Length: 253
Image (tube, one colour):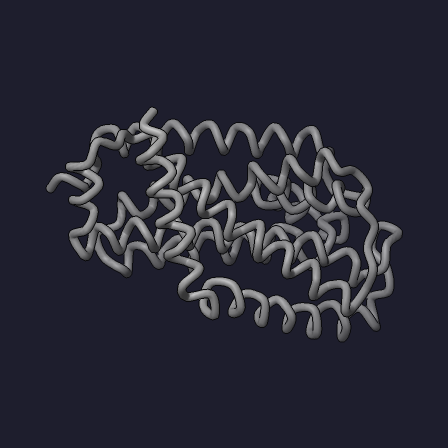
C-alpha cells in the first residue's frame, strides 16, 4: 500500500468536489428542501402518520439516504469518467499507485461528500420537524456502507461507459426509479399484492429502511435483513470494481 499516493489522490478528490461546492453540496440541499416542502409539509398535512410516527419524520431518513446514494455515485462516476475522457487517467496509470489505492481514494472521497450532504439534509429537516435517534449503531453502519456501495457502483459505471449517454443511464434509469420505489415517501405495507412482494426485490428498499430503523426504530423490513443486503451488494461491487481497475478495463485503450 502506497500511503503517500493514497493520501495525495484522496485529497485531490476532496478538493475536486469542494471547488464546485454550489453544484456538489448546495444543489442537492435545495432539491431536498423542495422535497420536504412538497412531500413532508403538503402531503404530511393530509397523511398524518405512518407506522406510528408523523409522516414528515417518516420521510427524513429516506431523503437523507436518497441524497447520500446519489452524491456518492455521482462523485466517483463523474470524476473517473472525466479523467478517461480528458486523458488525465494516464497520470494514474504511469504513477506508482495500485488499484487498491485508487479504489480507496475515490470511495473515501465519495463517502465524505455523501456524509456532508446527508448531514446538511438533517439540518434542513430540523426546520420542519424534530426526530429521535433510535439506534446509533445501525445509523452509523448504513451511513458508512451504503454510500461506499454506490461509490463502487459509480466506479464500475465510469469504467464501463464510453460516452456521457452511457453514464447517464445509471442515475436516470436505475437510481432514480429505485429510489422513488424504495419506500422513501411511503411504507410498502400500504401496497397491495403483488406490488408489495415486487418492492421487496428492490435493494434500495432495504437501505432506506435500515437507516429509518436507526433513526426512528420503525421499518418495513428487519434491520438485519437490510444489513445483509447492503453487505452482499458492497462485497460484490468491491470485487467487480477491484478486478476492473486491476485489469485496467477500458483504461489502457
